[in-house]
Length: 131
Image (tube, rainbow, N blue to C red; front, side, top):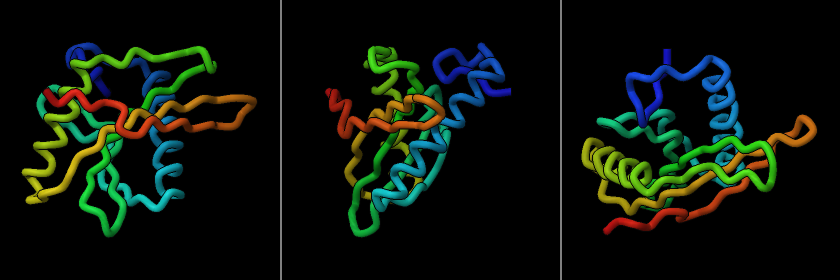
């Protein structure tokens, strides 16, 4: 059973797990079409989980992606600074563990389902609050 990355002792419902996995798959395909290579999914470090980690061949840039599934254009999921700080620290740990001296970019990817079709909206460099 999967647990919430924010509240590790709180299990996610099966429906939320499936919706999250669907959203992550949509975003992974979107980035692949843009020429990125998927490195990891649901990578965990301490209390953080990175939904998707990708990079573009030929660049020394690790892209950490937070995926949010939204229902309507006016839906704006909560994007908490604390969560993105955890993601940034986890990304730094990933680089260290793999001996990489790359830059990090954190993207927010919103996935909307409209009339049975998915629509991915990517906000590149969404969070830059390193300080």
